Length: 174
Image (cartoon, rainbow, N blue to C red):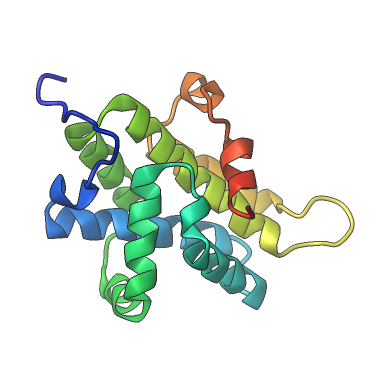
């Protein structure tokens, strides 16, 4: 990428993206949340609590861009959620838009890790509710997470790069 930004010790990602693009990144959290939480037909309190936990503990998130995006959501959650609820972009189109946006603005490592963080969020939400015995992630939630990964255009090779989805997922509770 010829116009790839130079990443310094700390990157102020809000300066790289326009306000509209930043909103798209913020919405990515809600697109993944809705895809997974609604997979079984309803959003339950445990899933909402898991989202709230992510917001309150965003400093533990490994990917700096994802951490910055989630921090800005937490600072103005009600307004951003209301804007999201009034937005008409479908989850599939939104996640593809996120993929294209990232590809045009940041380096490959940041892109892959942001997308993997979104997938880890999907697993985190899915694990928040579910059965006490057996798997906590339902087959519907598993399908929703796989579709999110496909629409984010994550490859199998990228999923195997470090940090793993499991490492990202584990950081949410630190």
